Image (tube, rainbow, N blue to C red; front, side, top):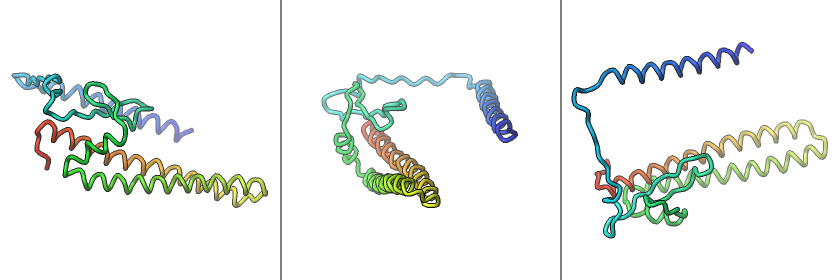
Length: 169
């Protein structure tokens, strides 16, 4: 119970600190506010390639769309991302982490199968270890999937910067 209360207080203190930091940054302002205008109609034309926007939300984590709202398939996104030469290494890393993700998912399926077989045979140690392996494979699959998605998001950012004419480092 003490751990739960201390975790709650720690989380609350971070929230209070974040609020304090935001209020203190609001008090320091320049004398002339800087205003940036953005016209999305100037980006959609016949000659310029379209911007790719990452769709937000829990179930749209891996979805991308164009600026006008058209959903893109994975093949279309990959075709757009390959047009930028700086994305080659990012897409290679994304493919490697996606392969690792599939390997962990296969390990999860194998662990579930072994767990069901061991449970049927009343092998308590094997049931325990296969469940632990399944949980580990699941956690590593989630982490490797997040890494693959982060490399793809970085490639989308590079693509959008090159479309807008901003030089990449």
